[in-house]
Length: 82
Ligand SMILES: [Zn+2]
Image (cartoon, rainbow, N blue to C red; front, top):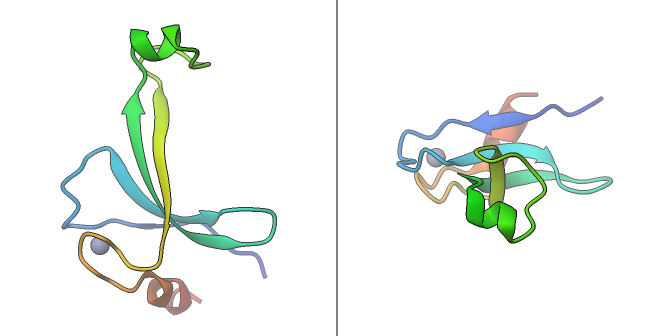
């Protein structure tokens, strides 16, 4: 049985650059990750960012169990989709 990526589309999330996904976090484990993205600008490229200007650059990753915006138990979502 293979797992698949899920996404928690949260109405309480007011940040357009933040998303919550269920994804592979290492060789064996999957988990819910809060990611915040930002667009790379000149300063990022000058400071060594390997990518195009205006490409999405991940600035933060955080493992979570509950949605920090609405408080939903994300592990329940994972189980309910099986
Ligand atoms: Zn939520």
